[in-house]
Amino acid sequence: MNAGLTLRKNALFDKNDGRSVVIAMDHGAIAGPIPGIIDPKKLVQACVDKKVDGLLTNKGFVDASIDAWNRSTALVLRITGGFTVLAGKFEEELIVEPETALAYGASCAAITVKFGHEYEGKFIKQASLAIDRCHAMGLPVMLEAMAKGSLYGEKFASNDEQAITMVARMGAELGADMVKTYYTGSQDSFSKVVEGCPVPIVILGGAKTDSIRQVFQDIYDSLEAGGRGIAVGRNIWEHGNVEAMLDAVNGLVHSHWSVEKACDTVGIA
Image (cartoon, rainbow, N blue to C red; front, side, top):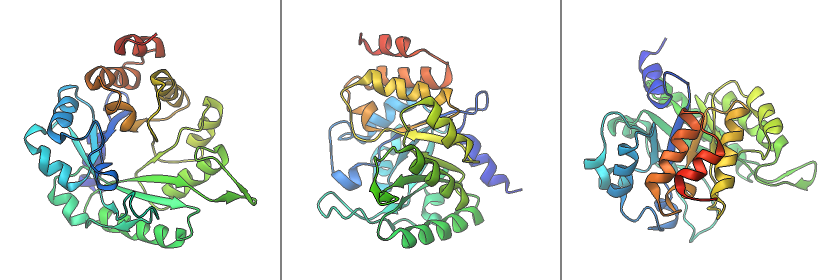
């Protein structure tokens, strides 16, 4: 048993309910200072004050907000990336060494695999070998499993049930300790994703949506289907009232709130 691996993994998941609220703020390395993450310290302070379980971000974001962190908030450090919206090819590279993640005090490393991409094999090999290195040092890995391409000659949506069921399991097979992926749109379909994946699944938020109620509904339904939490960013900090949004998602994940109660918290009908 690797005690370090277990202790770091436990830092992300609440001991009482086994669930996790991770707020993703790793977007700046790809898209620059978009609204909501312009001031790293302010956003981290809000998350720390609201006692979220973890923050997913980059080295520079940690450096710029270091005074706002405390020991109760787990760091999930992104170690793959290497592209921006200026280039648009979205090809993942290992850009941070696992040793650096440990030096930053990370509880977990984050790696993305774009299954179905033309460089799928490269991404899979890179992720698998990086997971081996992380585990050798007692560092868990959150694998963001993306589904691209086609099934049976037909292109599919990014949250396609069959594709997400496949890539979630593929991520677990590579040795990931948890999988971050899309919610498939219904409790029935997402329960099949959870059933087929032997490690915890948290849902990502994707592009910003104007429907806060739908964000909350997706979170609620994913939990009812067996999901273990969220790793959401833009749909939390781009909606304006960050503190209320954090209260709402914490309530949904850890206090079993209804969607209506979450909506009331942020003041929407």
